[in-house]
Length: 256
Ligand code: ADP
Ligand code: MG
Image (cartoon, rainbow, N blue to C red; front, side):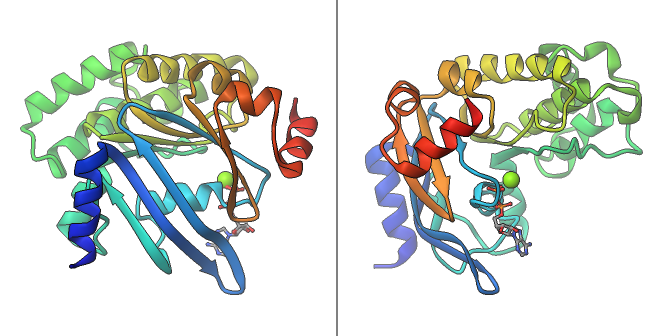
């Protein structure tokens, strides 16, 4: 039996949306992801926390295939991540990603930022794409900024545009890699509120964040990483009140 059919059977049986099995990744001598097994169910919100350098961003980038992995497998909705080509572009669009830096296209308007991928990757006609873009911009509270360029917006507004742009692709899962870390404090909540709403609407989400309030209120599960490994997985209640590992206790004592 091929690896492909194994992955498809697993997903059909469980309804899991993201399945990582024994994923390993090195950067030279650095073993940055070590035997990562992680399964995320449809509609689940998983918050990933851990010290700087523990591999959280690399994990997100691997799930979106911005990084290759050395061995193991990653499947999205039953489909193993392909290596390249059109299929990769489509699968990547199934995984919406929002980064710490608001990497919008600087020379496109807000509306164009949210329209472009729909036309190029999802093959929508321009009018339908613009309609969807405007609806999404309204939903994240920046509808009035549609004709502006990213530099004319605040960081919080840009990050909400980035969320709208990812949602425009109709992703099956959304990845957030420290989406509020680069924001001025007064803008953090407006972004977290959009994410909270998304979670309530049933979006499957993987969120790397140090915002423990968000983790407590939105997460179904907390995954704690250290040194390239998943050290601990628990509900937010269990994790924050009674972390099992010394690494997690140490980490929490520093941030709480
Ligand atoms: P985190 O997001 O948890 O802070 P990262 O996934 O960014 O961790 O990084 C994990 C480790 O991998 C760090 O030691 C980092 O320096 C290293 N690293 C990340 N990206 C690269 C790269 N492209 N080349 C070499 N080392 C990298
Ligand atoms: Mg990181």
